[in-house]
Length: 181
Image 1 (spheres, one colour):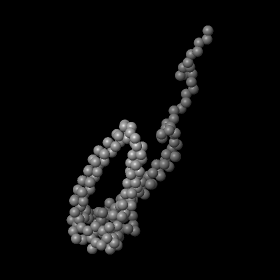
Image 2: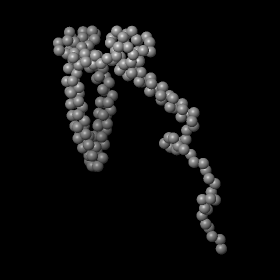
Image 3: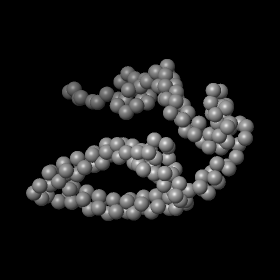
């Protein structure tokens, strides 16, 4: 009488465990990981340079900014460092009012977006009605259009001069184009 028994775990050859570093279970070699992270660090540094330059320059007087442009000191907080530029900006224009307006518009937009989008999402996901797919396609088109359309709209408005307290706060070309000043 032969009986079939399942092999015990000790009968099976043991495989070394793989450590996966990505989804999908593929393991990566150490040189590949070093290369990937090195490339990401270089890209991050490349994209952070303008931000660092902007923040450091905001702390320097105009003369020092232009004097440091040809040296690495442009990216370092050295020399005459002060917050006077920020105080001058808040004295020249009503920056607190601008920030308050931006905050108000942001809060109202987010609240209305949450209400409308939650109701639309529920209706599109749970209810079955005639024309549902067409409405969904229209919503997707509008979302993509508004996302893509923000760039050109922003560039158009940035060309126009802004008049603050009777003075034009923009470049000479945009003052002439928009009739300010």
